[in-house]
Image (cartoon, rainbow, N blue to C red):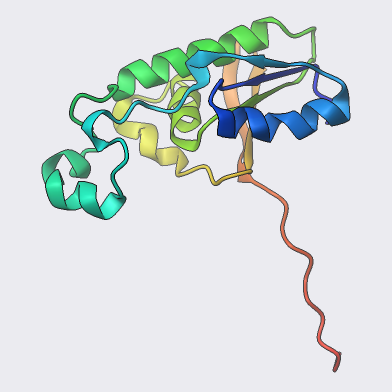
Amino acid sequence: MRPDLIVSSDLLRASATAAPLARLTGLEVILDKDLRERHGGVWEGLSDTEIRTRYPAEHAVWAPPEGEPTQVVADRVAAALQRAAAALPADGLAVAVSHGAALRMGMSRLLGLGEEEFGVLGPLSNCSWSVLGIRHGHWRLLEHNAGTLPEPILSDDR
């Protein structure tokens, strides 16, 4: 796809994911703390089972106590994606490497979805991608949660 820009969360797992693309393209990875995952407050370090058990009401609406509110995450990630888009030449392509929930919230914000509609996009799997574009001044979703599929295994008795 020949990107013109690579931006990444400054957290190690995201920047390490961006590094091979940077080597392949010769581009520098620009780190942006606004692409970080949502801060989970008291949920940090707990498994999903532990969160469900200790915080059932909060888990039901995915609101981590002392954590970062959904609106704040959506706004900061959308702002980072807007900055990346603004830095592109006409018809340019940016690759943003971040974290599934943060990207989903930021993309939902760019697409004009309300917080109650953020779940419409569904999760973003590890090492998969979504493609957004701007047409007539509006963001649109062109592809979501895409990735490469493994090669089929052929049996010997074709």
